[in-house]
Length: 190
Length: 190
Image (cartoon, rainbow over all chains, first blue to last red; front, side):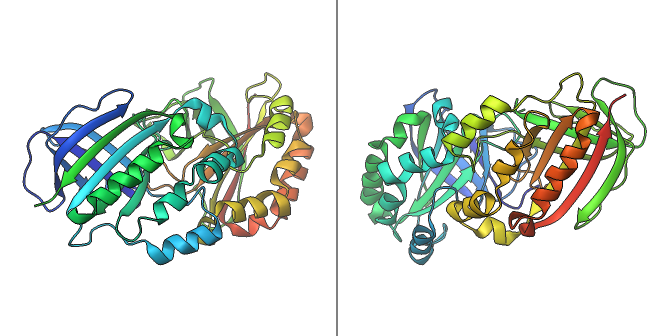
């Protein structure tokens, strides 16, 4: 299995484990609901056999950058931090699906909307290094997936307000008008 | 399973089937060999349980365009034909893998090499509609895959020389210096 794969298993009950996050809130932003769960187990590998208590499983692979210029990549690399800092006890998962109008655009048209119009990377940069982020790609997994991407965030409790501002800014963009399913899953670790 | 998935099963013997192509020649262009087989079954779906005679299985998904401008897309759409014309009894599969230097480039740097320097789409357009082509993406499948892409071609026997010219042109480009594994599998149907 791909070393770039991460699995997200949503359950109502759980075996305690280091990789377990507790769900504090699930909100359907648009499209179909994802069934409610109380815990999400996040593991950097495939889970071929789901535990009996699993309600859903999402998974995705990290991949090459698609909308980032060399200058933007350098800025991101200098300022971003990896998931998993000890103080980052708040997490958020945002699975999204984009509509066929988005996928029918050419690369340059998608980039124009993503950055020149929507400032996706520019907005994200404002919240670095406080908000750590990792993008998981589901669209080309080969299995029929309910979402195109899962974006995973973590941050310290004091930065939750900044994260809310980041989300509000992104959801007001032209890019977001191409999203036809989005669920927000707020997580915490004790 | 994804409706965009195609499986390629290489075997030494076979049950006759409409989807079976006979291998006339396998050539390793660079990197590790793929074991020799006498037939390849090409099916537009996943094959969860491989037949006992299978030697290898490749698979990939068709996906959105990554290096094509709106103008190039319009030209391609006007001129290209789908795989499977009755006269297209010659086929070729070319699995390739690109090295980490390629994947570490930004999108704009990859596009610059792919088209402005290597003329990948421009070269391919010269051979339309004679040479039909479909690109299958393996890199983000979630399984550990031996190749990043499988490109599938078919054409009438009279166009085999044109196909050889196309391959020679592409293999002389800057883009091809980023390929670290490539196998060429020539196929025929009776």
